[in-house]
Length: 148
Image (tube, rainbow, N blue to C red; front, side, top):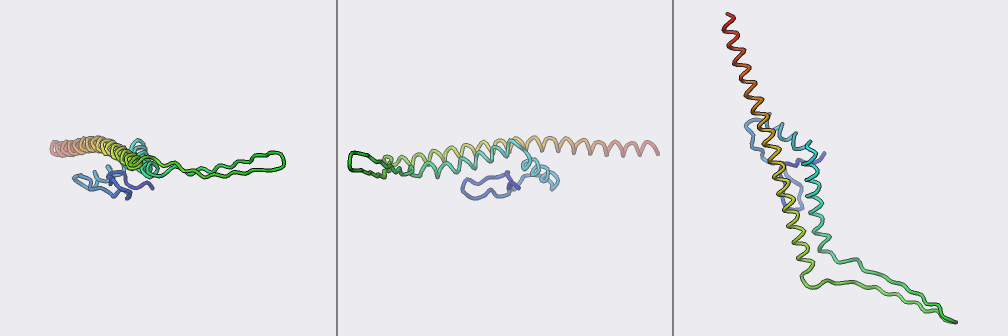
């Protein structure tokens, strides 16, 4: 199962379950369930995890190249083999890695914003439901009083 997507730590560590600011355990359970099952939030989480992996790719050197050549001439063969490696200018890989981490932070911010918007929707629906449930209890109590 996908780990809780509610709070994410900007590091290579897995996200820790958050402290959800909910008044009771029922609302907290609804919020956790909504976060775990929301497809857009899961997709944003996957994009964030992928953007974290880009930092290692950006700071790595390019793969070395091996070239092999064979020249056929009359009465003698010549073979050549060559290994080459391109090295970027000083500081380029570090800068690219920092840019990749900055992109990952931006993705994390988008993840937080999406999560918070989802939590607002869940809380609004829950509080509306709680209000209507309480109102129904009051009406039923008034009805009992009027019938006796």
